[in-house]
Image (tube, rainbow, N blue to C red):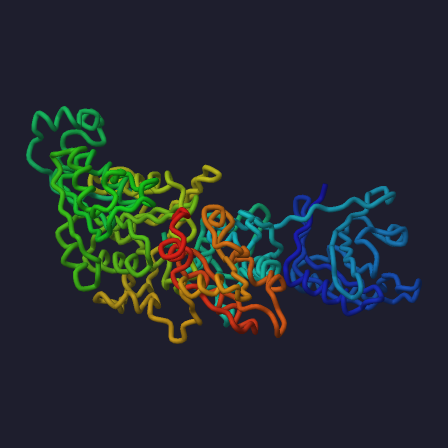
Length: 618
Protein backbone atom coordinates (compact mmCIF):
# COMPACT_ATOMS: atom_id res chain seq x y z
CA UNK A 1 0.00 0.00 0.00
CA UNK A 2 1.34 3.44 -0.89
CA UNK A 3 1.57 6.30 1.60
CA UNK A 4 1.34 10.07 1.40
CA UNK A 5 2.80 12.83 3.55
CA UNK A 6 0.95 16.16 3.40
CA UNK A 7 2.68 19.31 4.62
CA UNK A 8 0.68 21.56 6.91
CA UNK A 9 0.60 24.62 4.64
CA UNK A 10 -0.66 22.48 1.76
CA UNK A 11 -3.39 20.94 3.88
CA UNK A 12 -4.54 24.34 5.15
CA UNK A 13 -4.83 25.64 1.58
CA UNK A 14 -6.85 22.59 0.48
CA UNK A 15 -9.24 22.99 3.40
CA UNK A 16 -9.65 26.72 2.87
CA UNK A 17 -10.20 26.23 -0.87
CA UNK A 18 -12.81 23.54 -0.30
CA UNK A 19 -14.73 25.66 2.21
CA UNK A 20 -14.61 28.77 -0.01
CA UNK A 21 -15.85 26.90 -3.12
CA UNK A 22 -18.81 25.30 -1.33
CA UNK A 23 -21.44 24.30 -2.52
CA UNK A 24 -19.35 23.60 -5.63
CA UNK A 25 -16.34 21.36 -6.00
CA UNK A 26 -12.88 22.90 -5.90
CA UNK A 27 -9.79 21.38 -7.46
CA UNK A 28 -6.06 21.86 -7.59
CA UNK A 29 -2.66 20.31 -8.26
CA UNK A 30 -0.40 18.57 -5.74
CA UNK A 31 3.32 19.36 -6.00
CA UNK A 32 6.02 17.25 -4.36
CA UNK A 33 8.13 14.13 -4.78
CA UNK A 34 7.64 10.36 -4.88
CA UNK A 35 10.17 8.01 -3.30
CA UNK A 36 9.97 4.41 -2.09
CA UNK A 37 6.18 4.20 -2.22
CA UNK A 38 5.61 7.49 -0.37
CA UNK A 39 4.27 10.66 -1.95
CA UNK A 40 5.62 13.80 -0.25
CA UNK A 41 3.20 16.68 -0.92
CA UNK A 42 4.83 20.02 -0.17
CA UNK A 43 2.50 22.36 -2.07
CA UNK A 44 -1.14 22.55 -3.14
CA UNK A 45 -1.81 24.76 -6.19
CA UNK A 46 -5.45 25.80 -6.80
CA UNK A 47 -6.76 25.30 -10.36
CA UNK A 48 -9.91 26.35 -12.17
CA UNK A 49 -12.70 23.78 -12.30
CA UNK A 50 -13.69 23.89 -15.99
CA UNK A 51 -16.82 21.77 -15.86
CA UNK A 52 -20.42 22.74 -15.14
CA UNK A 53 -21.51 19.10 -15.01
CA UNK A 54 -23.71 18.03 -12.11
CA UNK A 55 -25.35 20.10 -9.37
CA UNK A 56 -22.01 20.48 -7.57
CA UNK A 57 -19.88 21.23 -10.70
CA UNK A 58 -17.82 18.09 -10.61
CA UNK A 59 -14.04 18.31 -10.62
CA UNK A 60 -12.26 18.47 -13.97
CA UNK A 61 -8.89 20.03 -14.90
CA UNK A 62 -8.12 21.53 -18.31
CA UNK A 63 -5.07 20.42 -20.29
CA UNK A 64 -3.49 23.87 -20.16
CA UNK A 65 -3.78 23.98 -16.37
CA UNK A 66 -2.30 20.50 -16.20
CA UNK A 67 0.73 21.55 -18.25
CA UNK A 68 1.10 24.77 -16.26
CA UNK A 69 1.12 22.79 -13.02
CA UNK A 70 3.82 20.49 -14.43
CA UNK A 71 5.97 23.47 -15.42
CA UNK A 72 5.53 25.07 -11.99
CA UNK A 73 6.57 21.83 -10.28
CA UNK A 74 9.65 21.49 -12.49
CA UNK A 75 10.70 25.07 -11.73
CA UNK A 76 10.55 24.21 -8.02
CA UNK A 77 12.64 21.07 -8.49
CA UNK A 78 9.63 18.87 -7.81
CA UNK A 79 6.98 16.88 -9.66
CA UNK A 80 3.25 17.00 -10.26
CA UNK A 81 2.28 14.13 -7.94
CA UNK A 82 -1.52 14.36 -8.02
CA UNK A 83 -4.65 16.44 -7.65
CA UNK A 84 -7.07 17.40 -4.93
CA UNK A 85 -10.76 18.19 -5.06
CA UNK A 86 -13.65 18.58 -2.67
CA UNK A 87 -16.87 16.63 -2.22
CA UNK A 88 -19.58 19.05 -1.04
CA UNK A 89 -21.99 17.29 1.33
CA UNK A 90 -20.54 13.94 0.33
CA UNK A 91 -17.96 11.57 1.94
CA UNK A 92 -14.27 11.82 1.07
CA UNK A 93 -14.47 8.68 -1.07
CA UNK A 94 -14.05 8.39 -4.86
CA UNK A 95 -17.19 8.43 -6.99
CA UNK A 96 -17.73 6.67 -10.31
CA UNK A 97 -17.09 10.04 -11.96
CA UNK A 98 -13.70 10.19 -10.21
CA UNK A 99 -12.89 6.67 -11.37
CA UNK A 100 -13.76 7.52 -14.97
CA UNK A 101 -11.51 10.59 -15.08
CA UNK A 102 -8.48 9.54 -12.97
CA UNK A 103 -4.97 8.50 -14.10
CA UNK A 104 -2.75 5.87 -12.46
CA UNK A 105 0.46 6.79 -10.59
CA UNK A 106 -1.06 9.95 -9.14
CA UNK A 107 -2.45 10.73 -5.70
CA UNK A 108 -6.02 12.03 -5.49
CA UNK A 109 -6.85 13.85 -2.27
CA UNK A 110 -10.56 14.20 -1.62
CA UNK A 111 -11.85 16.64 1.01
CA UNK A 112 -15.34 16.26 2.43
CA UNK A 113 -17.11 19.61 2.95
CA UNK A 114 -20.35 19.72 4.93
CA UNK A 115 -22.37 22.92 5.18
CA UNK A 116 -19.36 24.98 4.16
CA UNK A 117 -17.02 23.42 6.77
CA UNK A 118 -14.04 21.28 5.73
CA UNK A 119 -14.16 17.83 7.30
CA UNK A 120 -12.23 14.58 6.76
CA UNK A 121 -9.55 14.28 4.12
CA UNK A 122 -8.31 11.09 2.40
CA UNK A 123 -5.93 10.29 -0.44
CA UNK A 124 -6.53 7.66 -3.10
CA UNK A 125 -4.54 6.06 -5.92
CA UNK A 126 -5.96 4.37 -9.03
CA UNK A 127 -4.97 0.77 -9.57
CA UNK A 128 -2.89 -0.01 -12.65
CA UNK A 129 -5.83 -1.88 -14.16
CA UNK A 130 -8.05 1.21 -13.56
CA UNK A 131 -10.77 -0.92 -11.95
CA UNK A 132 -10.83 0.76 -8.55
CA UNK A 133 -9.13 3.17 -6.17
CA UNK A 134 -6.97 2.12 -3.21
CA UNK A 135 -6.69 4.40 -0.19
CA UNK A 136 -3.21 5.68 0.63
CA UNK A 137 -1.93 5.57 4.20
CA UNK A 138 -1.16 8.95 5.66
CA UNK A 139 2.42 9.22 6.92
CA UNK A 140 2.40 11.57 9.90
CA UNK A 141 5.01 12.59 12.44
CA UNK A 142 4.73 11.16 15.93
CA UNK A 143 5.04 13.83 18.62
CA UNK A 144 5.86 12.58 22.12
CA UNK A 145 3.97 14.58 24.75
CA UNK A 146 5.58 14.90 28.22
CA UNK A 147 3.48 14.29 31.32
CA UNK A 148 3.03 17.97 32.33
CA UNK A 149 1.48 18.77 28.93
CA UNK A 150 -0.80 15.74 28.55
CA UNK A 151 -3.62 17.57 30.31
CA UNK A 152 -3.85 19.66 27.13
CA UNK A 153 -3.77 16.73 24.62
CA UNK A 154 -6.67 14.78 26.11
CA UNK A 155 -4.16 12.80 28.23
CA UNK A 156 -2.44 11.34 25.15
CA UNK A 157 1.26 10.48 25.52
CA UNK A 158 1.84 10.63 21.75
CA UNK A 159 0.01 12.45 18.98
CA UNK A 160 0.42 12.04 15.21
CA UNK A 161 0.63 15.45 13.54
CA UNK A 162 0.82 16.56 9.91
CA UNK A 163 3.54 18.66 8.39
CA UNK A 164 6.80 18.64 6.54
CA UNK A 165 8.66 20.84 9.02
CA UNK A 166 8.77 21.25 12.79
CA UNK A 167 6.83 24.50 12.52
CA UNK A 168 4.06 22.86 10.49
CA UNK A 169 3.83 19.89 12.85
CA UNK A 170 3.60 22.17 15.90
CA UNK A 171 1.02 24.33 14.12
CA UNK A 172 -1.07 21.25 13.37
CA UNK A 173 -0.67 20.02 16.93
CA UNK A 174 -1.68 23.30 18.57
CA UNK A 175 -4.43 23.82 16.01
CA UNK A 176 -6.06 20.60 17.21
CA UNK A 177 -5.27 21.19 20.90
CA UNK A 178 -5.75 24.91 21.39
CA UNK A 179 -5.02 24.94 25.12
CA UNK A 180 -1.54 23.56 24.42
CA UNK A 181 -0.45 26.59 22.41
CA UNK A 182 0.17 28.93 25.35
CA UNK A 183 2.50 26.36 26.90
CA UNK A 184 4.64 26.07 23.75
CA UNK A 185 4.52 29.57 22.27
CA UNK A 186 4.67 33.14 23.53
CA UNK A 187 1.77 35.50 22.66
CA UNK A 188 4.01 36.79 19.83
CA UNK A 189 4.25 33.27 18.37
CA UNK A 190 7.85 32.46 19.39
CA UNK A 191 8.68 29.02 20.75
CA UNK A 192 9.12 29.42 24.50
CA UNK A 193 12.71 29.27 25.74
CA UNK A 194 11.90 26.77 28.51
CA UNK A 195 10.53 24.30 25.94
CA UNK A 196 13.01 22.34 23.84
CA UNK A 197 12.02 20.42 20.72
CA UNK A 198 14.03 17.49 19.39
CA UNK A 199 13.88 15.59 16.12
CA UNK A 200 14.97 12.11 17.11
CA UNK A 201 17.91 13.01 19.39
CA UNK A 202 18.85 16.37 17.81
CA UNK A 203 17.91 19.75 19.30
CA UNK A 204 16.21 21.85 16.58
CA UNK A 205 18.09 24.93 17.84
CA UNK A 206 21.18 23.43 16.21
CA UNK A 207 19.35 22.38 13.04
CA UNK A 208 17.01 24.80 11.28
CA UNK A 209 14.76 25.53 14.25
CA UNK A 210 11.08 25.51 13.22
CA UNK A 211 12.10 25.24 9.56
CA UNK A 212 13.76 21.88 10.25
CA UNK A 213 12.46 19.45 7.61
CA UNK A 214 10.96 16.12 8.65
CA UNK A 215 11.14 12.81 6.86
CA UNK A 216 9.23 9.58 7.23
CA UNK A 217 9.96 7.86 10.53
CA UNK A 218 11.14 10.97 12.39
CA UNK A 219 9.97 11.31 16.01
CA UNK A 220 9.53 14.73 17.62
CA UNK A 221 10.03 15.11 21.38
CA UNK A 222 8.81 18.10 23.39
CA UNK A 223 11.03 18.50 26.46
CA UNK A 224 9.89 21.24 28.87
CA UNK A 225 11.77 22.15 32.01
CA UNK A 226 10.49 20.10 34.96
CA UNK A 227 10.09 21.41 38.61
CA UNK A 228 10.39 18.62 40.16
CA UNK A 229 30.88 12.39 25.92
CA UNK A 230 34.10 11.12 26.57
CA UNK A 231 35.67 9.92 29.81
CA UNK A 232 36.17 12.83 32.21
CA UNK A 233 39.47 13.00 34.05
CA UNK A 234 39.23 12.83 37.82
CA UNK A 235 40.11 16.02 39.67
CA UNK A 236 40.18 14.27 43.04
CA UNK A 237 43.52 13.26 44.53
CA UNK A 238 43.72 9.85 46.19
CA UNK A 239 43.50 9.60 49.99
CA UNK A 240 45.81 7.61 52.23
CA UNK A 241 45.63 3.85 52.36
CA UNK A 242 42.38 2.15 53.30
CA UNK A 243 41.90 0.62 56.74
CA UNK A 244 41.28 -3.10 57.20
CA UNK A 245 37.60 -2.43 57.86
CA UNK A 246 37.37 -0.31 54.72
CA UNK A 247 38.96 -3.05 52.64
CA UNK A 248 36.29 -5.47 53.87
CA UNK A 249 33.49 -2.94 53.35
CA UNK A 250 34.50 -2.00 49.79
CA UNK A 251 35.85 -5.39 48.68
CA UNK A 252 33.41 -5.65 45.75
CA UNK A 253 34.68 -2.29 44.53
CA UNK A 254 38.31 -3.20 44.99
CA UNK A 255 38.16 -6.23 42.72
CA UNK A 256 36.73 -4.14 39.87
CA UNK A 257 39.54 -2.95 37.59
CA UNK A 258 37.61 0.30 36.92
CA UNK A 259 37.71 1.13 40.65
CA UNK A 260 40.38 -0.84 42.46
CA UNK A 261 42.32 0.41 45.47
CA UNK A 262 43.32 3.69 43.81
CA UNK A 263 39.73 4.42 42.80
CA UNK A 264 38.40 3.67 46.27
CA UNK A 265 41.03 6.00 47.73
CA UNK A 266 39.78 8.72 45.37
CA UNK A 267 36.24 8.15 46.60
CA UNK A 268 37.46 8.42 50.19
CA UNK A 269 39.19 11.72 49.43
CA UNK A 270 36.21 13.16 47.52
CA UNK A 271 33.43 15.43 48.69
CA UNK A 272 29.90 15.82 47.33
CA UNK A 273 27.34 18.43 48.37
CA UNK A 274 23.70 17.30 48.07
CA UNK A 275 21.20 20.13 47.67
CA UNK A 276 18.16 18.72 49.42
CA UNK A 277 17.47 15.66 51.57
CA UNK A 278 14.20 14.83 49.84
CA UNK A 279 13.17 12.53 47.01
CA UNK A 280 16.34 12.82 44.92
CA UNK A 281 18.77 13.56 47.73
CA UNK A 282 17.71 10.51 49.73
CA UNK A 283 18.79 7.71 47.35
CA UNK A 284 21.75 9.72 46.07
CA UNK A 285 23.15 10.36 49.55
CA UNK A 286 22.56 6.76 50.64
CA UNK A 287 24.50 5.32 47.71
CA UNK A 288 27.26 7.91 47.91
CA UNK A 289 27.72 7.09 51.58
CA UNK A 290 27.61 3.36 50.91
CA UNK A 291 30.16 3.78 48.09
CA UNK A 292 32.62 5.43 50.47
CA UNK A 293 32.60 9.07 49.38
CA UNK A 294 34.61 10.54 52.23
CA UNK A 295 32.68 13.71 52.88
CA UNK A 296 29.00 14.37 52.25
CA UNK A 297 27.35 17.74 52.72
CA UNK A 298 23.58 18.19 52.81
CA UNK A 299 21.68 21.46 52.51
CA UNK A 300 18.07 21.39 53.72
CA UNK A 301 15.83 23.36 56.06
CA UNK A 302 12.63 21.28 56.06
CA UNK A 303 11.07 18.88 58.54
CA UNK A 304 9.92 15.34 57.79
CA UNK A 305 6.23 15.07 56.88
CA UNK A 306 4.07 11.97 56.44
CA UNK A 307 3.68 12.84 52.74
CA UNK A 308 7.47 12.48 52.31
CA UNK A 309 7.71 8.86 53.41
CA UNK A 310 6.62 7.10 50.21
CA UNK A 311 9.71 8.36 48.35
CA UNK A 312 12.21 10.03 50.71
CA UNK A 313 13.88 6.88 51.98
CA UNK A 314 16.36 8.66 54.26
CA UNK A 315 13.49 9.18 56.70
CA UNK A 316 11.16 6.84 58.57
CA UNK A 317 7.84 7.07 60.37
CA UNK A 318 9.60 7.74 63.66
CA UNK A 319 11.24 10.82 62.06
CA UNK A 320 8.01 12.69 61.26
CA UNK A 321 8.34 16.17 62.69
CA UNK A 322 12.14 16.00 63.00
CA UNK A 323 14.42 18.19 60.88
CA UNK A 324 15.39 16.25 57.78
CA UNK A 325 19.06 16.91 58.43
CA UNK A 326 18.90 15.08 61.77
CA UNK A 327 17.25 11.97 60.37
CA UNK A 328 19.54 12.08 57.31
CA UNK A 329 22.66 12.18 59.48
CA UNK A 330 21.44 9.27 61.60
CA UNK A 331 20.55 7.15 58.57
CA UNK A 332 23.76 7.84 56.65
CA UNK A 333 25.94 7.22 59.70
CA UNK A 334 24.23 3.88 60.22
CA UNK A 335 24.95 2.97 56.59
CA UNK A 336 28.62 3.98 56.77
CA UNK A 337 30.19 5.44 59.92
CA UNK A 338 33.42 6.05 57.97
CA UNK A 339 31.81 8.93 56.03
CA UNK A 340 32.02 12.46 57.40
CA UNK A 341 28.59 14.18 57.26
CA UNK A 342 28.25 17.98 57.22
CA UNK A 343 24.77 19.48 57.44
CA UNK A 344 23.63 23.00 56.61
CA UNK A 345 20.19 23.87 57.96
CA UNK A 346 19.60 26.88 55.76
CA UNK A 347 17.89 28.05 52.61
CA UNK A 348 20.31 28.12 49.67
CA UNK A 349 20.59 31.72 48.51
CA UNK A 350 22.77 33.90 46.32
CA UNK A 351 24.52 35.10 49.48
CA UNK A 352 25.65 31.70 50.76
CA UNK A 353 25.82 29.42 47.71
CA UNK A 354 29.40 30.16 46.65
CA UNK A 355 30.72 29.72 50.19
CA UNK A 356 28.84 26.43 50.62
CA UNK A 357 29.92 25.03 47.24
CA UNK A 358 33.56 26.13 47.30
CA UNK A 359 34.98 23.27 49.39
CA UNK A 360 33.18 20.44 47.56
CA UNK A 361 34.29 18.58 44.44
CA UNK A 362 30.82 17.88 42.98
CA UNK A 363 27.38 19.38 43.53
CA UNK A 364 24.34 17.10 43.31
CA UNK A 365 21.17 19.02 42.49
CA UNK A 366 18.12 17.56 44.22
CA UNK A 367 16.08 20.77 44.17
CA UNK A 368 12.38 20.97 43.39
CA UNK A 369 11.95 24.59 42.29
CA UNK A 370 13.27 26.74 39.47
CA UNK A 371 14.91 29.62 41.40
CA UNK A 372 17.15 27.20 43.32
CA UNK A 373 17.87 25.15 40.19
CA UNK A 374 19.16 28.20 38.29
CA UNK A 375 21.08 29.30 41.38
CA UNK A 376 22.79 25.89 41.64
CA UNK A 377 23.64 25.97 37.94
CA UNK A 378 25.15 29.43 37.97
CA UNK A 379 27.15 28.82 41.14
CA UNK A 380 28.56 25.59 39.67
CA UNK A 381 29.60 27.37 36.46
CA UNK A 382 31.23 30.26 38.34
CA UNK A 383 33.16 27.86 40.59
CA UNK A 384 33.82 25.29 37.84
CA UNK A 385 32.09 22.54 39.85
CA UNK A 386 30.33 19.67 38.01
CA UNK A 387 26.57 19.59 38.63
CA UNK A 388 24.95 16.13 38.76
CA UNK A 389 21.41 17.16 37.78
CA UNK A 390 18.09 15.38 38.19
CA UNK A 391 14.41 16.28 38.11
CA UNK A 392 11.17 14.32 38.44
CA UNK A 393 7.43 14.64 37.83
CA UNK A 394 4.76 11.94 38.09
CA UNK A 395 6.22 9.05 36.03
CA UNK A 396 8.99 10.97 34.25
CA UNK A 397 12.52 11.98 35.13
CA UNK A 398 15.54 13.72 33.63
CA UNK A 399 19.25 13.45 34.41
CA UNK A 400 22.43 15.01 33.07
CA UNK A 401 25.79 16.45 34.11
CA UNK A 402 26.11 20.21 33.71
CA UNK A 403 28.98 22.67 34.10
CA UNK A 404 31.70 20.10 33.35
CA UNK A 405 34.72 21.43 31.40
CA UNK A 406 33.67 22.04 27.80
CA UNK A 407 30.12 20.81 28.43
CA UNK A 408 26.78 22.64 28.53
CA UNK A 409 25.08 24.05 31.59
CA UNK A 410 21.41 24.02 32.58
CA UNK A 411 20.89 27.40 30.89
CA UNK A 412 22.11 25.95 27.59
CA UNK A 413 19.15 23.57 27.83
CA UNK A 414 16.62 26.03 29.29
CA UNK A 415 17.77 29.66 28.87
CA UNK A 416 14.76 30.98 30.78
CA UNK A 417 12.39 29.54 33.38
CA UNK A 418 8.68 29.06 32.73
CA UNK A 419 6.30 31.61 34.25
CA UNK A 420 5.32 30.83 37.85
CA UNK A 421 2.55 28.26 38.05
CA UNK A 422 2.77 27.13 34.43
CA UNK A 423 4.64 23.92 35.33
CA UNK A 424 2.98 22.04 38.21
CA UNK A 425 5.05 20.94 41.18
CA UNK A 426 5.17 17.43 42.61
CA UNK A 427 2.92 18.66 45.44
CA UNK A 428 0.28 19.49 42.81
CA UNK A 429 0.89 16.79 40.22
CA UNK A 430 2.28 13.98 42.36
CA UNK A 431 5.24 11.68 41.82
CA UNK A 432 5.59 7.91 41.69
CA UNK A 433 7.41 6.89 44.86
CA UNK A 434 10.11 4.80 43.18
CA UNK A 435 10.87 7.40 40.48
CA UNK A 436 13.27 9.52 42.56
CA UNK A 437 15.01 6.29 43.53
CA UNK A 438 15.86 5.70 39.87
CA UNK A 439 16.87 9.29 39.04
CA UNK A 440 18.67 9.92 42.34
CA UNK A 441 20.67 6.73 41.89
CA UNK A 442 21.64 7.86 38.38
CA UNK A 443 22.84 11.16 39.85
CA UNK A 444 24.93 9.28 42.39
CA UNK A 445 26.33 7.07 39.62
CA UNK A 446 27.38 10.11 37.61
CA UNK A 447 29.06 11.67 40.67
CA UNK A 448 31.01 8.47 41.32
CA UNK A 449 32.13 8.23 37.68
CA UNK A 450 33.32 11.83 37.77
CA UNK A 451 35.29 11.16 40.95
CA UNK A 452 36.88 8.03 39.50
CA UNK A 453 37.47 9.55 36.07
CA UNK A 454 36.02 6.51 34.31
CA UNK A 455 33.20 5.72 31.90
CA UNK A 456 31.13 8.17 29.88
CA UNK A 457 29.40 10.72 32.11
CA UNK A 458 26.17 12.38 30.98
CA UNK A 459 28.06 15.42 29.73
CA UNK A 460 26.35 16.79 26.63
CA UNK A 461 23.55 14.25 27.00
CA UNK A 462 20.09 14.49 28.54
CA UNK A 463 18.70 11.17 29.80
CA UNK A 464 14.89 10.92 29.82
CA UNK A 465 13.17 8.17 31.79
CA UNK A 466 9.49 7.23 31.51
CA UNK A 467 8.59 4.79 34.27
CA UNK A 468 5.06 4.36 32.89
CA UNK A 469 6.32 2.77 29.68
CA UNK A 470 9.67 1.68 31.18
CA UNK A 471 11.70 3.42 28.51
CA UNK A 472 14.93 5.39 28.57
CA UNK A 473 15.75 7.88 25.81
CA UNK A 474 18.84 10.00 25.30
CA UNK A 475 18.98 13.43 23.65
CA UNK A 476 22.07 15.37 22.61
CA UNK A 477 22.94 18.61 24.39
CA UNK A 478 25.39 21.24 23.22
CA UNK A 479 27.11 24.10 24.96
CA UNK A 480 25.57 27.35 23.73
CA UNK A 481 28.33 29.81 22.78
CA UNK A 482 25.84 32.62 23.50
CA UNK A 483 24.90 31.29 26.96
CA UNK A 484 24.96 34.21 29.42
CA UNK A 485 26.69 32.06 32.06
CA UNK A 486 28.97 29.49 30.36
CA UNK A 487 29.18 31.01 26.86
CA UNK A 488 32.13 32.57 25.10
CA UNK A 489 31.24 36.04 26.38
CA UNK A 490 29.32 35.52 29.63
CA UNK A 491 27.27 38.37 31.00
CA UNK A 492 26.35 36.73 34.31
CA UNK A 493 29.55 36.92 36.35
CA UNK A 494 28.00 36.94 39.81
CA UNK A 495 24.95 35.34 41.39
CA UNK A 496 21.73 37.28 40.88
CA UNK A 497 18.27 37.49 42.48
CA UNK A 498 16.82 34.16 41.29
CA UNK A 499 13.37 34.75 42.75
CA UNK A 500 13.14 37.82 40.55
CA UNK A 501 14.72 36.03 37.56
CA UNK A 502 12.07 33.30 37.80
CA UNK A 503 9.25 35.80 38.28
CA UNK A 504 8.42 34.64 41.80
CA UNK A 505 7.05 37.95 43.02
CA UNK A 506 3.75 38.86 44.69
CA UNK A 507 0.94 39.23 42.19
CA UNK A 508 0.23 42.85 41.32
CA UNK A 509 -3.52 42.26 41.25
CA UNK A 510 -4.45 39.24 43.41
CA UNK A 511 -7.70 37.49 42.58
CA UNK A 512 -10.68 37.85 44.93
CA UNK A 513 -10.42 35.50 47.91
CA UNK A 514 -12.54 34.10 50.68
CA UNK A 515 -11.60 32.12 53.78
CA UNK A 516 -12.66 28.63 54.78
CA UNK A 517 -14.43 30.06 57.85
CA UNK A 518 -16.44 32.44 55.67
CA UNK A 519 -17.32 29.64 53.25
CA UNK A 520 -18.47 27.40 56.11
CA UNK A 521 -20.70 30.22 57.41
CA UNK A 522 -22.28 30.76 54.00
CA UNK A 523 -22.95 27.03 53.61
CA UNK A 524 -24.55 26.87 57.08
CA UNK A 525 -26.78 29.84 56.25
CA UNK A 526 -27.94 28.15 53.06
CA UNK A 527 -26.51 30.82 50.75
CA UNK A 528 -26.71 29.97 47.05
CA UNK A 529 -23.17 28.84 46.10
CA UNK A 530 -21.46 26.92 43.35
CA UNK A 531 -18.29 25.35 44.77
CA UNK A 532 -15.91 24.50 41.94
CA UNK A 533 -13.09 22.02 42.61
CA UNK A 534 -10.32 22.29 39.97
CA UNK A 535 -8.15 19.42 41.24
CA UNK A 536 -7.67 16.10 39.45
CA UNK A 537 -10.15 13.20 39.87
CA UNK A 538 -7.60 11.20 41.88
CA UNK A 539 -7.37 14.06 44.40
CA UNK A 540 -11.15 14.40 44.54
CA UNK A 541 -11.36 10.77 45.70
CA UNK A 542 -9.20 11.51 48.75
CA UNK A 543 -11.18 14.41 50.17
CA UNK A 544 -13.75 16.95 49.04
CA UNK A 545 -15.92 19.80 50.22
CA UNK A 546 -19.55 18.60 50.34
CA UNK A 547 -21.58 19.77 47.36
CA UNK A 548 -18.57 20.72 45.24
CA UNK A 549 -18.38 20.14 41.47
CA UNK A 550 -15.19 18.76 39.94
CA UNK A 551 -13.80 20.28 36.73
CA UNK A 552 -10.00 19.85 36.52
CA UNK A 553 -8.10 23.02 35.72
CA UNK A 554 -6.83 21.68 32.38
CA UNK A 555 -10.41 21.02 31.23
CA UNK A 556 -11.92 24.28 32.48
CA UNK A 557 -11.57 26.38 29.29
CA UNK A 558 -13.64 23.94 27.24
CA UNK A 559 -16.19 23.26 29.99
CA UNK A 560 -17.23 26.80 30.86
CA UNK A 561 -20.74 26.03 29.66
CA UNK A 562 -21.17 23.71 32.66
CA UNK A 563 -20.87 26.64 35.07
CA UNK A 564 -23.98 28.52 36.19
CA UNK A 565 -24.72 31.65 34.18
CA UNK A 566 -27.28 34.42 34.07
CA UNK A 567 -28.05 37.35 36.31
CA UNK A 568 -29.50 35.19 39.11
CA UNK A 569 -26.70 32.60 39.14
CA UNK A 570 -25.10 31.71 42.50
CA UNK A 571 -21.70 33.01 43.59
CA UNK A 572 -18.79 30.78 42.55
CA UNK A 573 -16.11 29.71 45.03
CA UNK A 574 -13.15 27.91 43.46
CA UNK A 575 -10.71 25.70 45.36
CA UNK A 576 -7.84 23.27 44.82
CA UNK A 577 -5.35 21.67 47.20
CA UNK A 578 -3.63 24.81 48.51
CA UNK A 579 -4.96 27.72 46.44
CA UNK A 580 -2.50 28.02 43.54
CA UNK A 581 -4.41 26.25 40.79
CA UNK A 582 -7.72 27.72 41.91
CA UNK A 583 -6.25 31.23 41.70
CA UNK A 584 -5.43 30.57 38.05
CA UNK A 585 -8.93 29.22 37.53
CA UNK A 586 -10.49 32.36 39.05
CA UNK A 587 -8.41 34.52 36.72
CA UNK A 588 -9.56 32.43 33.73
CA UNK A 589 -13.19 32.87 34.77
CA UNK A 590 -12.81 36.61 35.29
CA UNK A 591 -11.16 36.92 31.86
CA UNK A 592 -14.08 34.95 30.39
CA UNK A 593 -16.55 37.49 31.80
CA UNK A 594 -17.66 35.76 35.00
CA UNK A 595 -18.37 37.93 38.04
CA UNK A 596 -18.79 37.13 41.75
CA UNK A 597 -16.00 34.53 41.63
CA UNK A 598 -13.69 33.95 44.63
CA UNK A 599 -10.67 31.80 45.36
CA UNK A 600 -10.69 29.72 48.56
CA UNK A 601 -7.57 30.77 50.45
CA UNK A 602 -5.47 27.78 51.54
CA UNK A 603 -7.56 25.31 49.55
CA UNK A 604 -8.99 22.09 50.86
CA UNK A 605 -6.01 21.53 53.17
CA UNK A 606 -6.99 24.62 55.14
CA UNK A 607 -10.63 23.46 55.05
CA UNK A 608 -9.57 20.20 56.68
CA UNK A 609 -7.38 21.98 59.25
CA UNK A 610 -10.00 24.51 60.35
CA UNK A 611 -13.41 23.11 59.38
CA UNK A 612 -13.48 19.36 58.82
CA UNK A 613 -10.51 17.51 60.40
CA UNK A 614 -12.29 14.17 59.90
CA UNK A 615 -11.10 14.12 56.27
CA UNK A 616 -7.68 12.83 55.19
CA UNK A 617 -4.95 15.23 54.11
CA UNK A 618 -2.49 14.45 51.35
